[in-house]
Length: 116
Image (cartoon, rainbow, N blue to C red; front, side, top):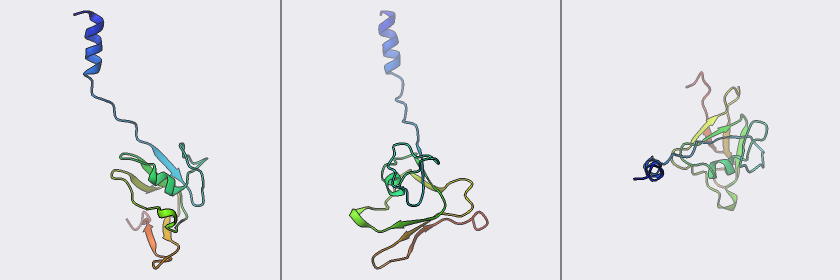
């Protein structure tokens, strides 16, 4: 068997590499919609949640995130996506519903380190 053909077959036999996980930084009131979400240019949290897949992390900077449910947007998070407070923020993020029968209901509040 020629060496080039053997090398090609060896490469094809390797398992496919999984795509690298993405960390997306989000901030209250941001309207930026990726693809890069950094501390300097954070994304809209709904966009980040919708566009994340298994293994990705969405880090929420401190503050209140309003959820109005408009446009049939869902707060459903794909399996394997982690939502967490941004490291180093003193105040924990809160996601709050702003309209409908559950107006002002807290959708998600993270415990402080002292409470966890």
